[in-house]
Length: 145
Image (cartoon, rainbow, N blue to C red; front, top):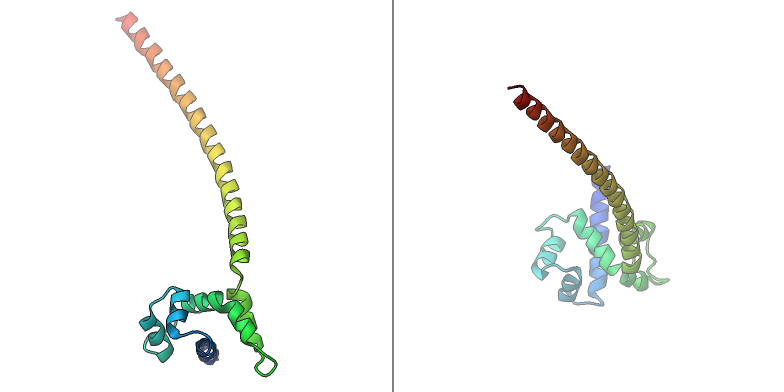
């Protein structure tokens, strides 16, 4: 069952790529995706396996183009719309989400840095007391001899 779904998904991807070829030459599609034209041809011909990353890149790159390609005569089916939703976030949405995630990471790192800094301060104070204690013990031992 999963294999059948995967095959259907790959076939749909090939149809979507082919629909883009009506508007863009294969070289333009490859350039916009940031891949070599030969690799794109190899993916589409089945000479190379299509990876999830390739699928994500395609739908992210051509989400808006695929939406405008759909007409009343050629509606986009729900699975294509799902892929467009998952992979086709606009670059602004993607950047905004990435920025929010980076802000959260930055806040976590700032809190961790404060804890680490305080731990280092306490350790330095403890080491200083230890050194002072050792110096006192050495001095006492020297006085006794």
